[in-house]
Amino acid sequence: MKTPVKYFVSVAVILTVGCLSSSVNQHRDVAFWHAQHSPKSILLNYYGFIADFNAQLNNLPDPHLYQLALNQVVDAQFAWALRLLNNEEADAAMPFWRASVDQQGIEQRRQLSASLFRFERWEDLEYLNEQQLLPAGDVAEHLKLHRSASPRRIEQGFANDEGFLLDFSQLQAMPQCQYNVLMMTDHRLGLRQLNALSQRYRQHPQPRAASFCFSKPIYLGNTIDCQQQPDAAARCNWHPFIADKTWPAGFDFIVMMTATGFGNVQGGIMHLNSTSHYGLFLHELMHFNGFEDEYVLPAAKQAWLCDQRGLVAPNLFIANGVAPPKGWTLSASCQRGSKAYKPSADWSIMQYQILPLSEQYQQLWLQKINEPHYQPVRFADYFQQMEPAMDFINKMTNKNIAE
Image 1 (cartoon, rainbow, N blue to C red):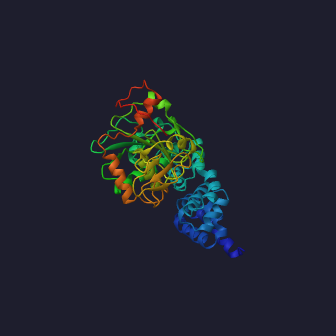
Image 2 (image 1 turned 45 degrees about the vertical axis):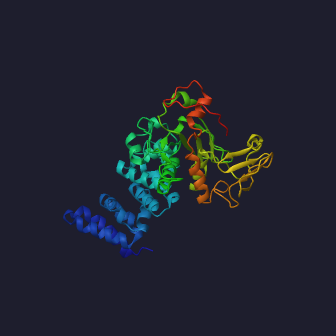
Image 3 (image 1 turned 60 degrees about the vertical axis):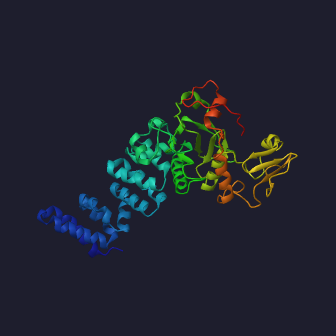
């Protein structure tokens, strides 16, 4: 409870301001001291020295700043919200900054948006954007990426700083690499994940150095339609891209990272989702060079693959009336038709993607890409099969493409 003595001190501090202008600084200091030592008097002292208190809101202890915020002191509401955000209390901060943000300057709003971005508070950032209170800059650009906005709406300078591309115009294949790969995504998290995957690959390239070179991630945003079914294989509709895009010369494969869906390879195009781990990426990369899964294949694939004969993949032999290579063991790939065999009795990365690439499978991979006349199925082949009349920059021989 406030004692009469404390109350009269507070009143005296305020009244003295009008009578002794030469003592303003002294009385202001007394007000600050009194406010710091008596939280309940903070309002009385604040209204005596509003400008001075506003200039030092960030120096007030939590109880004092909270009292001002509760009493709808606008700058205190905003300062209290930022303090809560710094303490990782984003939910508690929201009502305070929403009540005060429209009266803040651009630098204060920039500080708020940076804090909200740090916690990935996309709905809050969307609110600021809708109220036209989100400053232009990196956070606003990240929000566009989060919404999968069109590449045309993304600032080029921001894309340069973040290390991704908005189109194919400056892409060039690396002639020293055996295969060049276009890395693409339709969403923000995909950009980061693609960079992480390619960076890890460069640290330990397989099956040898310069086997694969990866482009910077290319952001497609809402210009491509990708299915959003987490329990199904990742898929995108490439038909509009076949005629509308000028594809760069010298690229062999595409890695497309979607938000959801199981990883798979079809016709020189790898689909991954943005939570895919590196083992799966390497597993799918081996599919580019014809490796088959060593777990049970889909029934539709078994219907044609498991009735073949001999070596159908670097790691799969179909014993349709012929003996498998020496040392090869049964594979779970074929549950119908002829039996399938794999090179090793041990589990491999083609059966469980969490396993590392073994020396044996690395050598099989290397042997495959070193075959003199070996030509893998490239994305251009796949597109040509979908649209035979399409004019590619890099014409390639049409092949039979099987999923």
